[in-house]
Amino acid sequence: MVEGTEPERKFSWILRSGWKGLCPRCGKGHMFKSWLKIVDRCEVCGLDYRFASPDDGPAFFSLCIVAFPLIFLVVWLQVAFEPPIWVHLFTSLPLMIGGCLLPLRPIKGWLVASQYVNKAQEAGTAGLWGELHANAEAKRAQRKD
Image (tube, rainbow, N blue to C red; front, top):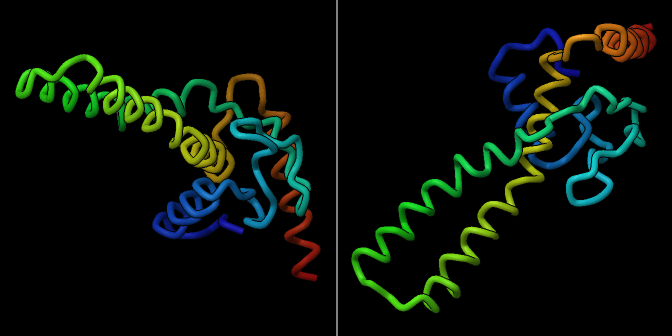
């Protein structure tokens, strides 16, 4: 659905399908079966998610985007106002935990969609990618007929 498109459209497709947790091939099936567990296959188009391996990527991006800026905010709060520890327990701690956990799923979806659309592969998975994209090409050819 995305192949042969300009980079802006490709980027918007990755964001739209990945952040919503939808299949990067058809945009209709669900990518997740639980909070962070990826389904084995798309229930609509049958995309095999064996290629998906975002590993620690979501945690890294969550820490860089959320945790590091919040740490500076917490340090500033401590230096500027010197509040008691209970203030940090009720403000800083929930902000850090929620701020780091909530974006994990959208970031993981974005990484999986990026892997599929850009055909990113690990060493030794060329056969798997050939199989995945050959099936997509065959379905595309059937639709054109």
